[in-house]
Image (tube, rainbow, N blue to C red; front, side, top):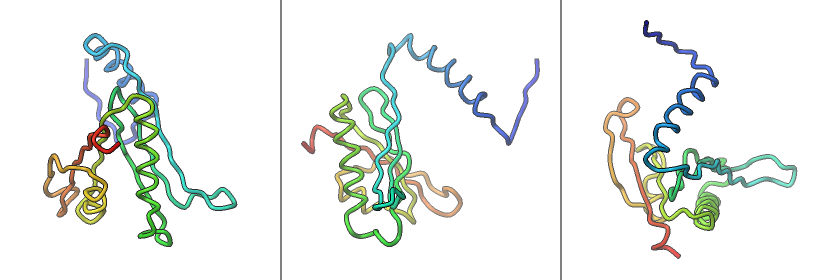
Length: 141
């Protein structure tokens, strides 16, 4: 037996580990619904001007990425993307949401949308903070 370390992780390797972990976890939580979520703001030609990606896991919406082009920032597009993702997740059984952001990004934005700070990771990635937020989707119906 040996330990191998790589900087070039293959998709198949990550999927294999994910499948083993899912099999272990299912003994405790059963087969919970885990689906990818994408919400996009498109121009008339179908080009993405803003977007949100994430997933649902059981009763949780996990927002992974939110991007709004600089020309649209401050115009409510990000809020609309978040609300659309929350509504979609709620309709599919989610009751909570989580997101994280760096100190140079969007902390006030998420707080304005009702997200509550749960944890701060200092010196991440180097000299900034990473904020972790959650929101109870049933409180905002």
